[in-house]
Amino acid sequence: MDLTHIRILDHHAHNLLTPEAMAGFTLTAAFTEGYAQEIVSQHVRETLFFKRSLRQLAEALDCAPTLEGLLDAREQLGYEQIAQTLFDAGGFAALLLDDGFMPDRIMPTAWHNRFAPTYRFIRIEHLAAQLIAQHARWPMFAEAFRAALEARGSDVVGFKSIIAYRTGLGIAPPEEDAAQQCFGELRAQAERGLPVRIAHPPLNHWLVWTMMIIAARDGVPVQFHTGFGDPDLDLRMANPLHLRPLFEHAPFRGAPVVLLHASYPFTREAGYLAAVYPNAYLDLGLALPYLSRAGMRFAVRAALELAPLSKIMFSTDAHLIPETFYLGARCGREIIADVLSQTIADGDLSAAEADAAALDILHRNAARLYFGQEHIGPA
Image 1 (tube, rainbow, N blue to C red):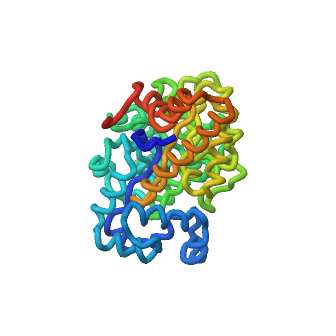
Image 2: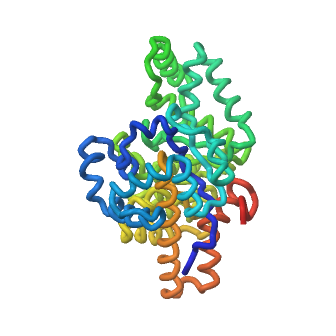
Image 3: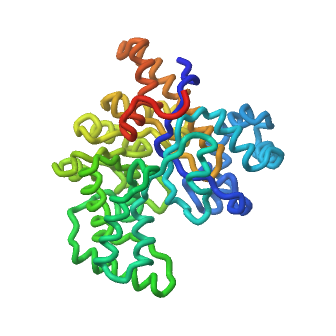
């Protein structure tokens, strides 16, 4: 199968760094979830992902397939030209960005419209941290948080939570008194000029519960980080099965819940959730392209084992540099084509059904979920 004709609706990615932030950025850091100096400066270069990526980028940029060749190409082309080249090669119909990651070092979301129509998610932990710095009392904070979710702009297509990073996915109905106490502690930190990091179960649970109430009422899609990430994460608590109470809570059935990053290595668990809960959806991002080709095929095959084809979506989860957008798009098309070709050989799908599945996974499922239509962006 050749899927190069399908323009990708990238339903989960992040903003690019500013040129100023890039000046102090180590390029290899974008190729690993680790952040220890030994990993970034040495071991990441020995990963299959990095070695494969250098060859793929060399094809797109007509440079030597080495880190030095890539750095030379970046210097010769300049910031905006290398971004334009790689986004054009990636073939995107639209970009849906979480701009709560490194918010003080990234380009504005609207700036990315030069590459494809761009929309954004509200990351609730980032929003709450901003509001804690602005409001001295719990009632004012709670009302401001609800109001910000309800009065979302026309460019907002959904909400996102990184509670997996902060307290894990074991979310319980909140106790407002306990949440208010946590707010008081964080507000005191803000008043002392300290950064606000919300990693307090009662408050994190209150934020998610409040988000879900509004999302279910308004039919707004919600994304959860699941599966692997950087070492700030307790992987054991990032298993999407911990979200079962949310799926079982009848008032939340109106909120589509997207399980990001193929929930890797819990992809089969996520596929099960998508198969049995109407509002559970499975994303293939981050696992593609971070894994080996064999690993990427495993993740996509595991997703397809049980999850309905109507519930699976692809994203790049690209971040910081344009190379990650191109690599994600290229690997996404190639691996999805490989796996769907095998489903034809296995007799699971006809050729026509596999073609339709590819279009659904790369574009139509996300267009239906976030925009209520079959197609978004340029044809």
